[in-house]
Amino acid sequence: MIGDDAMRRSIHEQSRAHRLSRQDVLSDVLDLIRLRGESIEVYETAEAQRKPFDAGRARFHFIQDGAFRLDAIAIDTATLVAGDLVLLPKGCAHVLSAIHALDSLPGSPSRPDECRSFAEKPFRVLTGSFVFESASAGSLIGGLPDVIHLRADASGTPEWQHAILRFVRLEASEPSPGAALMISRLIDLLVIRSLREWVAKSPAHSGWLRGLGDARLGRALAAMHEDPAREWKLGALAKIATMSRSHFADRFTEIVGEPPLRYLSRWRLSLAADLLRNSGVRISEAASVAGYQSDSSFSRAFKARFGYSPGAVRHGADPDQGMPSR
Image 1 (cartoon, helix red, strand yellow):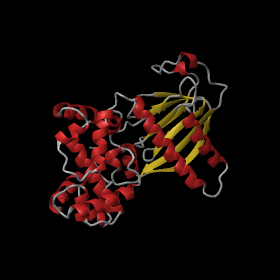
Image 2 (cartoon, one colour):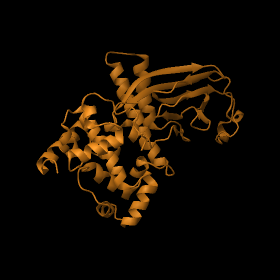
Image 3 (cartoon, rainbow, N blue to C red):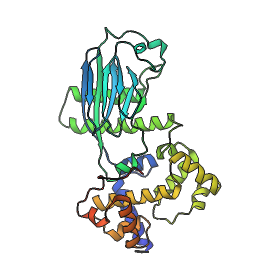
Image 4 (cartoon, rainbow, N blue to C red):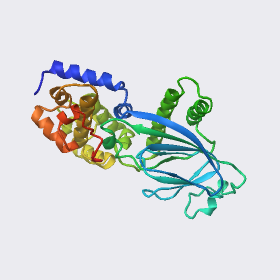
């Protein structure tokens, strides 16, 4: 193995500090993909007007007043009403259209108490954009849906959402020194909290986020993230999850969408790519953190994953380009 245990622990601690938080897997992953809020705007429109959004930037829309239809190639039409929040984390192209009444949309969600005219109400949406800056972003957000829709409940907008959006609107309408940074941080909070809320409410979705909602799988995921360089075996991970090997492997694959050790390999290489790109570590150090026994085996795995060598990343290549979703 390249380096001794002391070096591995030292570099592992560096990677921990670099990624700031080790409290839970969600924080770990979101910190690695470097979510950064960019900008916001309030969009007001008359009935039946359409607002197109090009592919590229990830976005969120919070419906302040009125009702809208969201159309995107990747999804079925969604109906949004006041208090709804929608995230488009992959930046797919879409169109928002103000609508007169909910019952004018065939197949729209059944909301009998809200099937009324919106003709005399304003149509207002708070829209924001955000990006994932890390080399690992393409891989780690690949398991997210194109659209995440958080509906207002019977009591209206949840308190956490109301509090964050209130400050977002305030900073946007009355900009003061530091407003751009404040808006960016507030968007970060909104997106992270929304993802956490969505995880809790989406038992049918597969992916690493769903795995966090399973108590036993969550323990195994946390163990892999806590010590990625460890020579993990399926039996050890199953023991942490208090499951049999076969049950753990089947359950993990069903929920997360890939076998445990394949997930571990992707996480290790994502971590190594981030270290090479942002921390200036040597290739041998990145290999050690990722649990590889030699530079050559690490380089082969890295190139198979990203399409070029670890050395190319150190010399400015962008791992975001052409990264596979799995």
